[in-house]
Every structure is written in structure tokens, then in C-alpha cells.
Amino acid sequence: MTIDGPSGSGKGTISRAAARALNWRLLDSGALYRLVALAGRRAQVSLEDGRALAQLAEQFDIRFGSDESGGEIIWMGGQEVTGDIRTEEAGNDASKVAALPLVRAALLDRQRRFAVPPGLVADGRDMGTVVFPAAEVKIFLTASLSERAARRHKQLKEKGVTANLAALSLEIAERDQRDINRAASPLVAGADAVLLDTTGMPVDAVVRRVLEVARGRLRGRL
Ligand code: DC
Image (cartoon, rainbow, N blue to C red):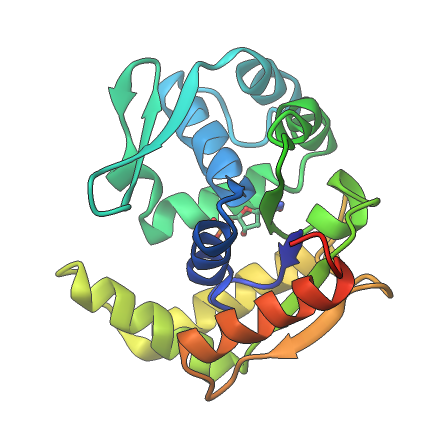
């Protein structure tokens, strides 16, 4: 199952919950782009140098895991980097490196290797359109810009980070533009994806709806 959509549409939360409910594997492809950007910064590589970043992306040693309460833990080169890749700055860096075709190509096989039985929930921008075009269930999540900014604001506040709502909204809008307008795998809802506008919807209602769509498509096999 692929779940695509813009920043703050709730993809991360919904994908995690759906994967848990189905007992399927989870691919957080955004984390891969965040890791490439972090690896680039640490190696003092320019975030515009597609060739060098692609080389890092092909070689880096990363691992995804979770703690006892199901929270994510991510390691790069044996070092925990969960907090480092979840900052707004890391998100912006990720959006820049994600526009580079060489970086996207370097991550393609790595992403496809996540697909193992009994199933995968793949969360990103181009999961249904480019990485897993044959996926049987494709969802495109959206929400209004103001709701997405408010969600991100709340998330940051819970982490003890102070953020300005207006500035966040502007940042998300800029990231949307970069993700939508890039030539390589732009953010777009595939014609075969089920569009789900989550504005005003509580998380559990969205998860229920996503599972309903999946059960409908995979009739008898879930
Ligand atoms: O979902 P996220 O915020 O962790 O993603 C970070 C950036 O990575 C986002 O601005 C766009 C990019 N991205 C992408 O281009 N393709 C994906 N499949 C996932 C993320």
C-alpha cells in the first residue's frame, strides 16, 4: 500500500498506524531523504552536489527500529540520529536533496527492497507513482495548508520546540512548491490513487478509512 501526500498531511502517523494494524512493514521514504541530507552535511558535501550525495545514499549504513512503545529509532553509521533528522531544518534540507535526480535514483532500489511479504506501507511523495507503480492500494492524503501548519506546530510544541505558526505555514508552503514543481518525481496524486482530504478528521477516523480502502481493494486477502 502506498500513502503519498504533502508535508503535514498526516502520512507519517497514518502509515505507522496502518502498518501496525495490518502487521506490515513500514517504509518512511522521507526519512531516507532526511538521512541523505544529514550525511551530506556531516561529510561537508554541498546539498547541490547530486553526484556526491548519490554516492553517500548508495553506501550509507542506516537502520530503522523502534522502542518498547513503538516510537521510531533511526541509526546512521551505528549512531542514533532520530532527533537530528526530525528538525524543520532537516526537512528543508531533505526537500532540497530530494529534487536531485541522481539522489532519487540512488535510493530507488533501497526503497524497493522494503517490499517483503506479507505487505508494505510505503509513505512518501512518489510511492504510488514512481517507486511502487504496481501497488494494489494507493492513497493520496491531503489537508488544508492551515491545518497542516497547525498540526506541525502542535507536534513541535509537544517536543518542547517553540515555533511560530505563521512562519511554519510559510515554510510548509515553500516546501510544497519545491516538491510539486521539481522535474524529478514531483509530488502528484496518481490517477489510480484514492484521494483523502483529512482536514478536520481525527487520526483514528483517517486510519479506519485507509484500512477500509485497503480491505476493499484486497478483498479476501486481508
Ligand atoms: O515526509 P518528510 O517530511 O519526511 O519528507 C522530507 C522531504 O523529502 C520532503 O520535503 C520531500 C522529500 N521526499 C520526496 O521527495 N520523496 C519522498 N518519497 C519522500 C520525501
